[in-house]
Image (cartoon, rainbow, N blue to C red):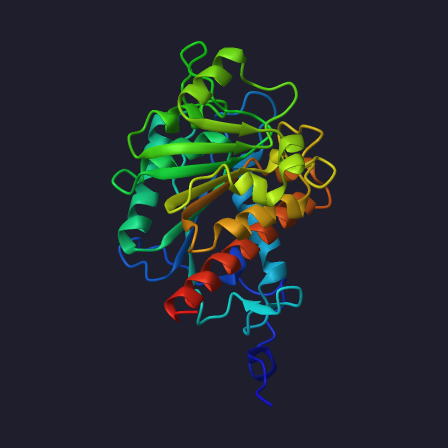
Length: 326
């Protein structure tokens, strides 16, 4: 019987070694990225309106991801009877962080956009760790020429504010800014609920821009299949996840928690379904608003890391199956 890699090499436990996402190799030369996935940190929380702290999200998520990264033979899921995240299915590198210039949102956003463009030029799929949700605007702008892209947005808040007191690039604006881009073909916004950062005019503007808006209760009523029926097939998908889309009982470490949120599998099963190549192609992800200081037990960072690791497993297992003609 063939031995697993961790039986013949270093055990490399979670608390051993340098901390990169999933203990992936480091690649700080952005002209030499050679991988299927590139993990980028965007530690900017200058767009927050209440509690800051998401600038430490990338570090927190990277640290938590080591929990799921020891061993070298992939991750076996007995429910699916499938091994995910094998080296044959997906290669990952951690490209470090975009440079954030304190108090200069325009320069910081330009640096984030530049970094994502370099990842896309390499042919890797960007996975961006926020930071607050304002980082989504420069990330999705970098996809110019890669559309039409359909955005799938998990969040408690609509994030469709146009402008307040001259502010157009805070964490309440990113989906509005995305809707103004020619390469965005539509969006599905899931988990939007209760007292929110947007007024009725913003909801009307989102619907006029072609957005489907579903609350948590809508998603539960429709089920995964019902939600998928509202998302177009055969298009590139970009997934943006605000951790406050989850209920604060499982994700307390965020600046603007909102009760009545998603549980883990409600989000994971939608992403798993979207990962099927028969539906479309997930071309990138960001996960934002993890603020470790508000979560003593770090369960929010662990949730973020686990969700991303499982999502990448689904995406690249399905790509490997499609390539093999299965």
